[in-house]
Amino acid sequence: MIHAVIMAGGAGTRFWPESRADFPKQLITIAGNRSMIQATCDRLEGLVSFEQILIVTGERLVEKIAEQLPELSRTSIIGEPCRRDTAPCIGLAALLCSRTDPDATMVVMPADHVIKQTAAFGQAVAQAAALVDAMPGRIVTFGIRPTYPAETFGYIERDEPLEQSEQTDDLCAYRVKQFREKPKADVAQSYLDAGTFYWNSGIFVWKAATILEELAEREPEMLGHLRTITEHWESEDFEDVFRQEFSAIDGVSIDYAVMEHATDIVVLEAPFDWDDVGNWTALSRLRGEDEEGNTIDARHLGLNTTGSIVRGRGDHLLVTLGLSDCIVVHTPDATLVANRNDEESIRKLVQLIEEKGWTEHL
Image (cartoon, rainbow, N blue to C red; front, side, top):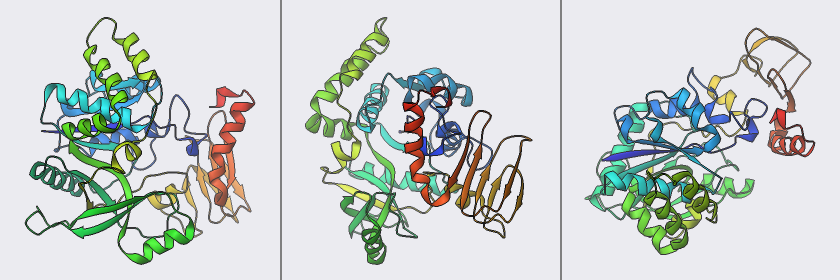
């Protein structure tokens, strides 16, 4: 049976001032009329039942996610007491899936991606699950064919295709040669030119037992803490045990803990459009631009305004004059005006606000 695990613990600081500690990016509506985490769950319709969905997030976000997803059981939303990166998150989810389904197949995905072709996504996950069923120790991931030399994505270098007898559908499956970190511009261009590299989507399909075996070999101490947590899952002292054991884990990413070492990894070329919506510039890709190159998501009046992104709420009027290549985001208590070509510095702005003690704006 397929179980879906949604990782929803990110802070989304590059979407400040709309993304806040208590209401981060995954709870915001960026495209369409559903928040990112709602859209992620919508994407799973017909693939898994609500009972087979687990959301792992920070404990301070549990209630807000439950409000946005009332169809899920409250026990399906797990609030980590502290951040420990993706490997502990995934390991805990694998243990929980295995409690009720020892042969569980997991599809693991972030909560903050935009994928519009729901049917194609479901078909791709089903094919990945079939590849895993055929070889239970296998790990399958999805590669996105790059359209420009992105410096903000990790990459997957593909190797030879699987044998024809191993192919289960019309999507091409390749063995993974290597995972590559986010490259500099010239390296990214060489990846694009080579034609054998994909953007790493961060979406994985595997058996829960496989990922637990990998963690047992490479992160036994971590897995020991996670097993103790699940052993106390329904006990009276669960919250204390969860906090104590999870806090004792040294945080590590699933890429570093497992993916860089596993030997049977397959990449499917994704048949769906994908956007990881990393910053405000993504609005231009998702919502389009007008004849002046502007992306407007607000009540707005502009004069001599070009190449800009303007976002606001309700009836508040935003007026721009003589702006070029800017980002303007208005919220009730904070407004961002930034050079569009320097939006990576928004993280630094958030840090400066914190240093000033203006935490009410974070």
